[in-house]
Amino acid sequence: MTAPGAAPAEIGIETRVREEVERALLRNVKGLEYLSAGAPEMGLTPKDVVYARGTLRLYHYRPLAPEVYRVPVLLVMSLVSKAYILDLTPGQSFIEFLLRQGYDVYMIDWVPRPADKRLRLEDYVLDFIPDCLERIRRDSGEPDVSMIGYCMGGLLAVLYEALHPEGPVKNLACFTTPVNFEGMTLFSQWTDKRYFDVDRIVDSLGNVPPELMYASFEMLKPAARLAGQVRLWDNMWNDDFVKGYRMFDRWAADQIPFPGECFRQTVKELMWENRLYKNELVLGGRPVVLERITVPFLHVMAEHDHIVPYASAKDLVAMIGSADKKELLLKGGHVSLVAGPNASRRLWPQLDIWLSGRSV
Amino acid sequence: MADPTSPIPDPVAAWRSWISQSEQQWNALLNQAMGSDQYSQWMGRMMESYVTMQKNMAESMSRYLGALSMPTRTDILTLGDRLAMIEDRLAGIERILTAAGTSAAPIDGSTVAMRPPRTKQPPTETTPGGESRGT
Image 1 (cartoon, rainbow over the protein chains, first blue to last red):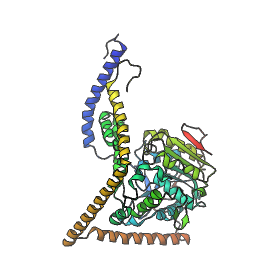
Image 2: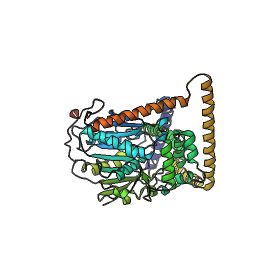
Image 3: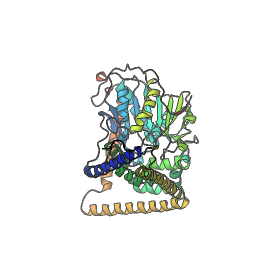
Image 4: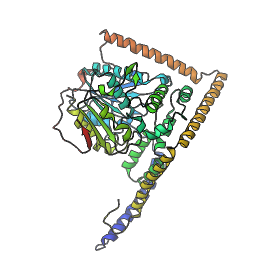
C-alpha cells in the first residue's frame, strides 16, 4: 500500500520495487515449473492425411467455419523446417486463423528420410507439387487452388508456377522468399566455393544433418541465444512470455535434414551461380522464367529478417509477370512474421484481405 | 516498463535496454568477423573434420554391428530405398488408374459431401497498415 499524500516519484519507486520483488519470487517458483515441464504441444489443429508418398505428406485441415470460400488454399512448407510453425497453438495458429476465416486449407509437409538424399528441386517442382494439386482438385471438387509458400516453400511455389503457368493455381502468395541469393551475404560467404566442399558433404553424409542446419541458423545471430535466455529469466514470471519462448525455442531446435542432392543443387545453382535471379535456372530441361507467372501474386517480407534478408527477397515481385501483384514489408523477423502474437496482428489480416476477394 | 515522464531513472529498464543493445552490437561484431575470408576458410576446415569424423564413426559402427550379426544402417537404408521405390510405383499406378477414370474417390475416407458449402463471400474491404507496393 502507498501512503496517502506520497509524492508521485515515491509512488513510482515503491510500486516498481514491489513489482520487482514479486517478479523475483515468481521467477523462482515458475523457474522450477519451467525446468520440470514437458515439451509444449503444437500442431494440434485437427487434420487428415490426404496423401503420403516418401518425404511428402499432404494434409487437409478440418474446416472450422460453417461455409468456406470456393477456392481451397495449399500451404507449401519449407524444406528446412517443420510445418508446425504455422500451427503453433490454439489462438496463435496461422492455420486455425485461416480455417476460422473460412478457407479450406491443405498443407504440403516434408518428412525427409535417408533415402530422400537423391531428391532434387525437379522432384518437388515437377512431381510432388503437381501431384498434390491434382489430388486437392479431386478431393475438393474445385478446379482452382490458391498456393501459399513460406521461405523455401515460397521458392518451390514460384518455381512450380513459373513452369506451370497454365496449371490450377489461381493465386500465389509467398512469405520471405529469396530470389537473389547474393543478398544472403553470410550464407554466400560461408558457402564460398573456394572453401566449402559441398560435393564432399553430400557424397559423405547424404542428407545434410539437422544439427548442421541448426548451427548455421544460430550463427546468423550468434548472441541471440544468450540474450534470449537472459530475457527468459527476466520474464519467467510472465506465463505468456514463457509459453511463447518454449514454443519458438522448441521449433527452432527441431530442424529436419536437408535432402542432399537438393542441397548440392541449391548451393551450386542458386548460391554460387545465382541462376534463378539471372533467369538461367533450368529444371527438367525447362528454363525457369519468373515472368511467366501471371496469376495474382503477393510477396510479404519482414523488415528484420536475418535468414532471408530484404536484399535477397526484394526483387521477386519485379521479376513476376503478373499484372495483379503486390509486395508488403511488415515489421518483424523471419519467424515472427508468420507466427506468434505479432503475426496475428500484422501478416494474417493482410493476407486475409488480399486473398478473400480472390477466393470466390 | 519504464515511465518516460518519471524523474527517477529505472535501473531495471536500463538493464533491459542494455541487453538488447549489447545483443545487437555483438551480433553485428560477430557477423562482421564471420563474413571474412578467414572465417569461411576455418568453417571449410571444420566441415571437413566433421564429415571425416561422421564417416569414420559410421564405418566403425558398421564393423561392430557386422561382427554382432546385426543389420547396419546401410542395410536399413537399402530396405528403406526399396520401400520408397515400391511407394513410388504404387503412386504411379494410382495416377494411371486416376487418369483412366477408375479411381476418383477421395483418399482416407474424407468426402466432399460432409464438408461445408463453398459459398462464403468476402467481407467489405478494409485496409490495415503496412508498407506496400503493388500494381
